[in-house]
Image (tube, rainbow, N blue to C red; front, top):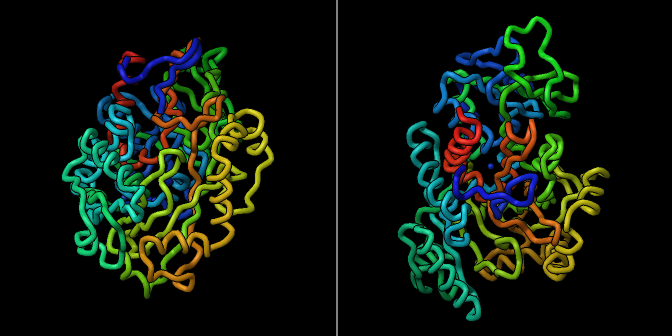
Length: 463
């Protein structure tokens, strides 16, 4: 077993742990058409696979790609509940290629982000996918932030982030002429990319190598087969039955789940531990009007406050030339609730009854109230943005898109900070690997994560 993956309790293992954003031409279906076997794919004769990956986001697709490139003789399938791939966390994130500066040294987040950023740049160069290495400034605007900024700089050096430097006011102005600040960390290797385009390129690689992608397949049940399929020549070679909401079935030997916002529910379906539970946090972005885009050159971030779980409102350029401002972080009332009034009674009951959210609320009450206030009143967000770029006014911004972060919480209301990979016991548990917590920087880290998953699958399932 990979040393970084360790066990929690007797049921499943737990390795403790911004918001997760072209199509490739050759294998992209027309809108609304299923992603089943574009040219170069291979059809499993009885909808049976050696390995099935549940989840068609960037982590699931990167993992499918890694597995089939390592094991080309295996039949591997990806199941995605939506009609298109990579449309939730992958398609709703800020598009930042993170450097790895924020994360606790020696954590999986730190190691995989630094490795993953280098791999993403290399992959985009190989595939001709556009990106911009526009850099990032983490800016201290108050004297009391400077000790935290210096500590963050030391952490980045520990994590192996290349070419970091502390800069003063005059150098801040050279990088960002309209930004005020006392001191900043210059992260020159931070970049931006369209992660949905990257994910669809992973899907194309996977299919060209012989993999199968089945969309509109929402998993409802995972169980061991009670008998072999009628007229089957394989007997019980494929003992796991995965059934969708339409009653359709896929059979397989082994399962890897990369279900993002539904990772706890998929784990529970398979008989594994449902904890950590997923609590959705919506991040609303604002847009800088086109005529004001000259105010921002690259990424501008505040100094994070370790008392609170998120990075704070920041300035993010996008590949299409737009500038995103945000996000805030407010509780979403639906797991895929991108609008303020999206609501799911089931999701709310899960949050209240099954997660540690109530404890989290009490632990971070003032922060939560402030985030709700900023979500309702744009002037509050603008006031924060003006600390960095005083020229911005409320007339310069528009309401923009939103994303939902799948945040894992333990029973005590603590945010699980690191990536979580686990399996289980019993007939199904021994044949399954869950990717349970992969928030930001999972997109940046996707190729590094996929290598770790491929290693673990190979060792766990003796492929």
